[in-house]
Image (tube, rainbow, N blue to C red; front, side):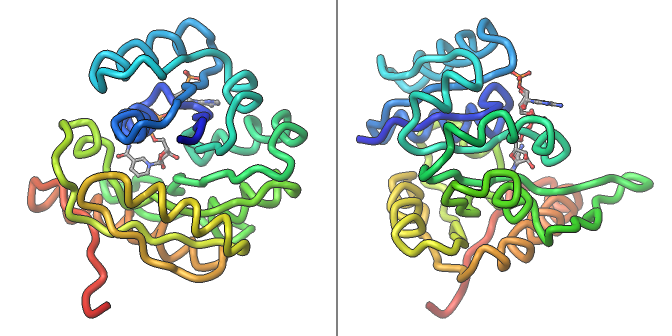
Length: 216
Ligand SMILES: NC(=O)c1ccc[n+]([C@@H]2O[C@H](COP(=O)([O-])OP(=O)(O)OC[C@H]3O[C@@H](n4cnc5c(N)ncnc54)[C@H](OP(=O)(O)O)[C@@H]3O)[C@@H](O)[C@H]2O)c1
């Protein structure tokens, strides 16, 4: 059992992952800019998962209490949200789920990220943390749908092998998920890009499709 803290865990992706991790028996702390919103989201996740181990509060509280942290704020919010958490993230595994995405004429595309990816930006903002990119291709709607097997891969990227191993083990506790080692953190840019592709595919096919790496 790990105590997992979410930064910006009140949105659909944070709640979806929190629900799946609570189902897997982990303790979850849902962080928010507003303690009340964090507590409301925690109650919703706890009720759905039938778990007493989901609490909520301010982002800083979630970060302090967490053994492992998951970032689920929008990419654009990282630059303001992460620096105040620098100290508390020191030496901790911090999972980056963010996908830099913009819409032009209704079409999704990726803005240029000077650091290369959202995950590398998170690492630059949190130099003492062990940042791992993961879960960027898991859509919130399917995570929240119920305890259905997802039938998807989670590509895990990072510079610390033990941190990657722990995040891979966590990912595989979500039913129907296989973790795939995506290599160094710099590969997270490709994983994030797949989500931009998936958003277009899902719109055209009216689907909740995800990713499976074939041939492994
Ligand atoms: N949604 C998906 O299906 C999906 C799939 C794959 C990856 N992701 C990634 O997962 C992350 C979360 O996605 P989401 O759809 O849940 O996002 P979201 O609903 O837009 O935002 C999540 C939470 O972040 C906080 N937040 C929003 N703007 C902020 C700001 N300017 N500064 C600080 N905090 C802010 C809010 O929490 P409070 O107001 O409570 O503070 C909000 O509830 C994103 O980075 C996204 O790229 C999402």
